[in-house]
Length: 476
Image (tube, rainbow, N blue to C red; front, side, top):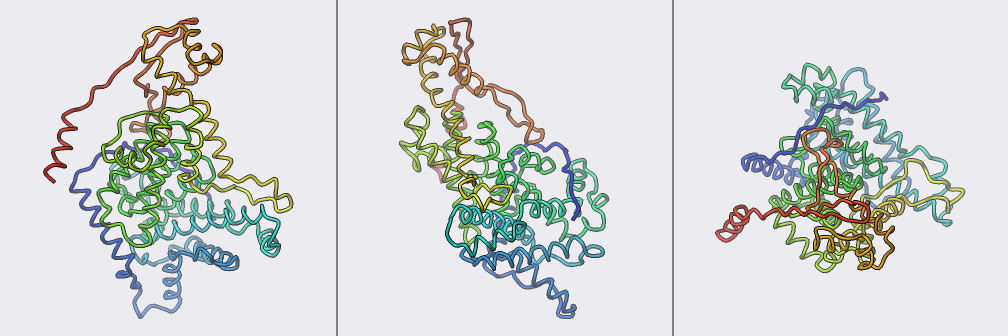
């Protein structure tokens, strides 16, 4: 299969679209619910088509069907072979395959299930490799190191993107040009266009699972994060995109941007919750809970004013835990760890495990948890330090060290770390990796020898917005 070099066209800023556009998306979600309920699963092929075409059409439908969670190892091998056969047919046939997807949402379902099975198999293989029992399965996995391999999965996604010319099409659309002019014979086919588009979202997910958060964000350079984007028409894709973008920002210490992403999708989902049913939306409900946990973490690192709906939900879900997170100190450490474990993706290793030395295999989740907890421990005294600094305009370093019962040089290190964390990149209208360096704290200070100069900028509450929101609730 061909390889692919990602484009670097800048993404446009996320905007707040009108209620009319939101109602149109709700209508799209209603259609998805009907599709999930089985009303629109009829094949698009005519009874007069050849048997081979019927077989391919059935394979297209089957590719979007979930594999049983408790499927035996042999079934996982067979599923991988089936995906390889299907993608080989789509990518390497003589000319584009002249077939229409079974539904508008089929392409997302295929990419989503393909990556889900890759993720599940990788976690399962790591678990078996770290055990000394079940030698039969260990041997089968040892003999098939390339089955559901990282390279194979990435190759499929990049090949679908390149074959469909989807990045060129998205670039043309941004410039106001006709995307069909750059789509080529493959990209003009709906099958390739949809698979290529959702493969970009798939790459975001895979790179995040592998722990490459910068590359995860880079893959979305050609996609605009707004409600007009193609992924926003498919509820699960919409939710998945913002979850992984927000998580990638969080792991890069860009907490303001992470809060922005999580808040956007949580508010949006709360407005469409009446349409969230079926198995697909059960998984969305779980991700919804995970994002509340992540936004609680981000707010602890970066205190900020949240939408009233989200703030109320956070207080209801976490209560005292949220207060402990915001106070910092050693008491907050187990809560940070608990929330991260519950809300993080199921990280995977890019290489097969070592079956000969089980003790050498490191759980990817534990690895990323350790990295995250290092950041937590580095910043856990920041709330306490800030609470003292808010009381003064100037303060002696040794005096503050006495209050905190720490050595002056240790306090100096804490102050430098806290100062550094107040400066963050904030996404504007560039690519997701880019941004403007801004001060995200209402408290600033500078060290002049042993003297601390403190300044505080208090932002007044927007009372007009507050009254409008509460009046609306009263009349509704």
